[in-house]
Length: 256
Length: 258
Image (tube, rainbow over all chains, first blue to last red; front, top):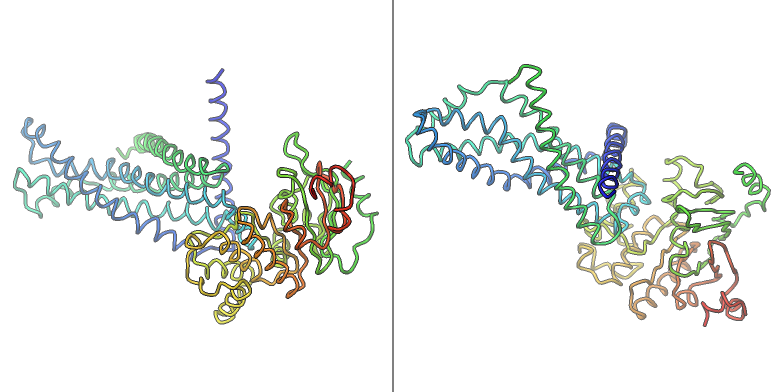
C-alpha cells in the first residue's frame, strides 16, 4: 500500500514538474524581459561558481591521471595516458562532475532562496508590486543556469586537463606541448559537441528543479530545508538520467 | 447558481462615490473548509476599518482575495469600482499600485538593501521615473517612518519593529489610496506595537488613506479602528464602532472585548 502511495506521489510530482517546465516555456519569451536580473543571476550562478568548479576539476584531472597510470604502465601504453584522460574528461567526467557540483551549489541555493522567499511572503510581495514573480525569479534563474553550466563545463575541462598534465609529470616526463598535442590529436568534434550539448540540459534540469522545489516550498523553516535538500537530490538523479539518454542518442545518431 | 448570485449582487445598493472598496457575497473555501461564506464589507475614503477575528478565521484570506493573490470562489470585490476577480493582469497591476499591502511577515527582500527594497515597487509600477525622483520618494517614505539612517542597511540588520516600519515605508512609497494591513502588530512587543499603530494612524491622517486592518490585537482595534467588523464563521457577524461593540451583549462579540 505504501509503495502505491509513494508511486502515486512520484507521478503527481513528475506531472507538477512538467507543468512547471511548461509554464517556463510559455513565459520566457513574453515581455516584459527581466534582462538586468538575468545578468545578475548569470554573475551569481556562473561567475561565483567558477572557483569551486575550477578547484574540483583540477583535483579530478590530477587524481584520475594518477589512478590510471599503474594500469597503463602494466599494459605498456603509458604514452597513451594524455589521450585517454583527455577523452574521459571531455566526453563524460567533466560535464557530469561539473553538473553534480553545480547541482550541489546552485540547486540548493536556488531551492533555499526561493523557498524562504515563499515562506516569508516575499514572492507575494513581488506580485503585489506589479512584478510577475515567475518571470523575475524563475525564468531568469533557469535561463542563467542553462547558459552558465556549459561555460563552466568548458572551463572545468580545460583546468582538469592542466591537472592531468601535472599528474602525468609526477612520475613521468611529458612536455607541455607534447601533452596537449596528444590530447587534441585524439579528440574529435564527435567527442566535444555532444558533451557540450548535454551540459545545457544538465543546467536546465538544475535550474528547473531548484526553482520548482523552492517555488512550491511548504510553510515553515523545515519546508525550506526540505526544498534545498530535495532540489539537490532530484536534480542529481535527473543529471544521470539525462546522461543515460544522451549516450543512447549519440549512439543512435552514430556519434560514438 | 453563479448567475443567480451575480444578479443578486448587481441588484444590491449601487456603489457610493466615497466608497473605495465594496465586498459583496464573498465565498472562499479550501476543500471542505469554508473560510469565507457570504462575507460583506464596505470601506469609505479616509476610513479605518478593523476586521477582528480569531486565528484561522479567514482574515488573511480575505485581504489576499482583495489584492488578487487568491481567487474567490464566488462574489464581488470592487476596488475603485473594478471587480478584482474579473479584471486582467494589466488592470490588476494598475489597481495594485493604488492599494498598499503590509504583510504579516513584512516580506522585505532579504537580498536587497532598504533603499532597493523601497525602490522596487516604484521601478516596477512606474518604469519612467528619474533617479532624482526615486531618491526623493525613498527619502520621503523613510522620513515618514523615522528611519532615514537605515537607508543602506540590509533587512537582517534591523530589529523587528524597524523592519515593520520599513515595510510600512515600502507600502507608502506609491502613495496608496487604500492600505491593507495583515496583522500589523503580530510578533512585536506591546510598546513597539503601540508605536506602529500610532504611526499607522498618523499616516492615515496625513495622506487620508482608507485602511483595512486585519487584527486580533485589541490595542490596535481601540487605537486605530473607526469601525470594527467581527468575522465569525466566514461572515460579517457584527459591525459598529468600538463603543457600540463594547456595549454589545452577544456572547460571540463579548469574548473579543472582555
